[in-house]
Each structure stands twice: as structure tokens, then as C-alpha cells.
Image (cartoon, rainbow, N blue to C red):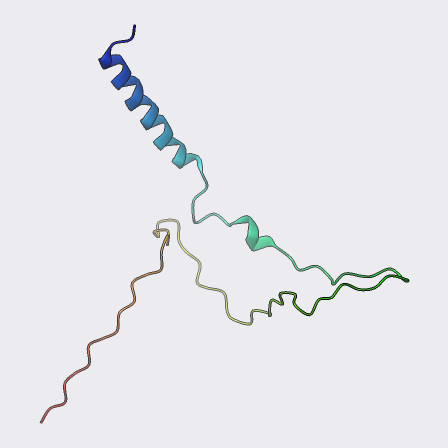
Length: 94
């Protein structure tokens, strides 16, 4: 039989091994696969067939904004948006 100490040691080793696996994943600074996605031309319907009803189809508009500034390797990953705060209004002087 395995003793309590050995079980505890095995559980700790297993936990450390699982925690170490997170370092094998790619960094948030690496390009994501979806950034290379390309649009495809619309569906071509062969002669003699009816086109599908696309009135409810999702239309993605063109993005006409500049690209965000590149992130450096040492920058922190943004897992959540940066904090947003507004300055407190200055009281009017009498």
C-alpha cells in the first residue's frame, strides 16, 4: 500500500506537471490563426438551381481603421480590457 506521504507527494507532482503545461501554449504575442483569415467570393449557383435565401445572412462590413500599434514581447497580455476611468469634474469656483 502507498502511504499518505507518498500520495501527497504524487498529488503535488501531478499538480506541478499540469501547471507547467500552460507554458507550452503559445503566447498572446504570437499571431493568432484567425488573423490570417481571408474572405471568399459569394456562392455561385449552377444554372437551373435556385439561390438560397440570404436576406438573414450575417454581413460583415469592411474594417477601415488603422491597425493597432504592435505589442512588444515584454508587454503584458490583455486578458481583460484595460481599466477605464474618467477624471473627476472640477467644481466651479465662485
